[in-house]
Length: 207
Image (tube, rainbow, N blue to C red):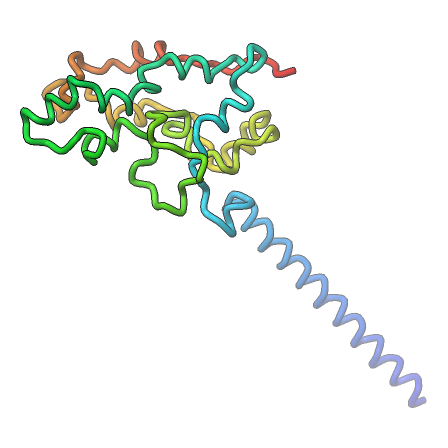
């Protein structure tokens, strides 16, 4: 009789343990899912970093991909930092009692990428001398610059990749010259026109 009662107790205990294990497993899975979808997978443990345009060129400098790197390389964005070092910029700074444009925060915030980003978010491969790069509009690329992210928009966005928008442009380009703007911007900014100059569509299919 005692053995039977003991068996019943043990059986009940086993059932409770199984139920508890199922609940714990469910809760654990839920926590993992929340972390996975709320944060980029690797940036849970480290901050996303700006890695520089050469990292982008690794996949975006071929005809098959659309050669977006070459389009950027021949754009005013690629020359943005170097423009701060030319004679016109330095002469303007001197005449208006401004710091050297290549070191002036007012200039650098629009003529470079990630100027205000914390040091921990800057990769050793990144250089401000690259000017206004892909990551200015698309976000720091340390995590999304993988083949899987490039082929899947959902993965790209989950890893904090951005598509880029008019809002990004208006952070530096003034719609009207009555607004605060760079003295070398001589025409009002028209997004619909400007975006065509830097158009770099992805190829329909990457082989």
